[in-house]
Amino acid sequence: MSAADASLCLMRLSQHPGTQVQLFVTQWLLELPTDDKAELARRLRALTPYFLTVLSQVHRGRAAKSRITAFLRAQTDDAGTAAVVAEIFARQVVTASLTDKPQYIAGLRDIAAKHPGIALPFLNWKQPAVPAAPASSGSPTSSTSPASAA
Image (tube, rainbow, N blue to C red; front, top):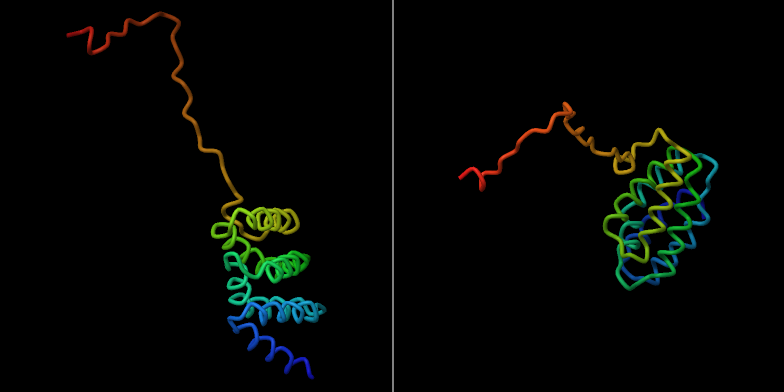
């Protein structure tokens, strides 16, 4: 089977709703050529709906989820592929179960460390500015409360 035929077959199989077929597709993911990083990023982007479908399943497809997460975390050496993985993980981190969330957060942390140029807006947390307390002049001021003034 040629690489083009295999890619076409992978795309078609990735659209199948069955968990067994989705697990089968994860085996093909491991065979994707990784030499051309731009082409790999394009393929990952094309497979994004598949990744999101499998990773979003509740109480199903644990083996496929684990394989996909490991596969995606291994694809973060190049900035182009890391950007695609960051988009997938950023979406999953807000929708995933508590069991899966730490993996996505760790993946995003690793991407941010390797590629600081990739925009991850929720990781650029800035502490809100707290207004400074007014400076006292040293003399006590008489403060009357509305209750005592009446």
